[in-house]
Length: 147
Image (tube, rainbow, N blue to C red; front, top):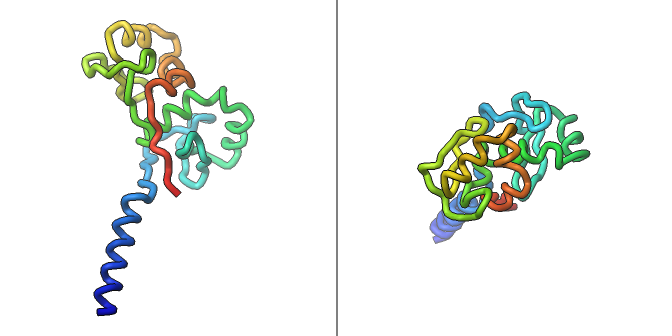
């Protein structure tokens, strides 16, 4: 009977841990928002309820010193690592139309309509246009890391 209870408790714990534990983030091809170099998992800091990854211990310091300067690249990194999901048009908050898909810094992004797609495509800095603070807040939802 004690073994049975221990077995049930173990299964319950493992099930709960898998549901509420942080999912592993794949960092292959992910670039540091400060330097543009490949990131390392040991150089991560909390950012918007998730984690931003950096290449070395100096880059998080630079990021903290001027987060606004690196925000678009850090927001893109959240999306590229699967920690953030595109849930609405970044310009209008309207539902997404898959026919408007474009690629921004290696990741597919959709908009609500052709006008919003054109707005993004014609910008000199498409990454900043799509992943800037205001746009990120409108169109993306961060999967907050559970503790």
